[in-house]
Length: 323
Image (cartoon, rainbow, N blue to C red):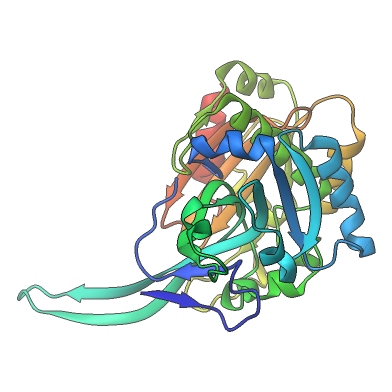
C-alpha cells in the first residue's frame, strides 16, 4: 500500500510501504532511458532557482552536467514540464515499515516496536510512455522510471519530516551532511561517467580501484568531521560525538578531519587531486566511500546493512585495502 506525505510536493516525494532493495551510494538502472535523456531536456527541480543560495549549485550543474540540455524549475512546476522528451532531477525517497518480533524458547512470539525506515536521495527519472496514453492523466508514481539515484545523509529531524528538503533552499540549510557544491560536482562527474558508459549499478555493490586506493599509503585522507556524529538508534539523538582517537585507532595512515564547508571549498578550488571519505547513513544502511576530488571517481565503496554509526572496523577495513 502506498503512502504520501501531506504536501503539495507529493508528486515528487512518494514513499512506499513495503520492500525496496537498493545496494553503493550511486545506483543506475533503466539504461534504455539514457538515450531519451540525451536527446531531450533534464529539468532540475529546486524550491527557488532564483535564490542566492541556489546560484553555486546551478553553476556546478552548468559546468558538469554533460548528458543533456538542462533547465532549472521549481518543484511546484514539475507537472508543467512533463513530456516524452523530458527528464527530471529531484529529491526523492521511500519508506519501509518494520516491526521487531521477539521469538521465545517455547516457540511463541510477540510483536515489538513498529517503526518506519526512510531513505532520501537525489533522483534522476523519466516519465513512462503509459502516462501519455490518455489526455490530462494525473501523474502518479507508477509512471516514474528511475534512472539514477544518489543517497543522501540527512539529519534525523529531516527523516521524521522529509518535507524539510522541499521547504529548504537547495543548499539543504544544514539538513544534508554529504552535500555542498564541491561534493555535488564530484557526484555529477561520477554520474555522467556511469550513464555515458551505460553501467548498470546497484547500491549494495562494492567498488574498488586497487591502483588508486594504494596511493593513500602516502597521501592524506580527508575526512569530514560529521563522521564523529553519534546517532542513538533508540531515541534519534544526534547531539553526542564519537571520540576521534577511538574511531581512528585502527587507522595508522595519514588523515585529516575537515569541516564540510572547507571540504567543498577544497574540491572546487584545488586543481591537484586529493582523496576524501564520505560516510552515509541512509536509515539503517551505511556506506563508506572514498572519492577522487579531481574527477569524482568512487575508488572505494563498502555497504553495511543494519549499521548506524561509523566504527573503527570501517577504517581498519579501508586500511587493509590500502596496504
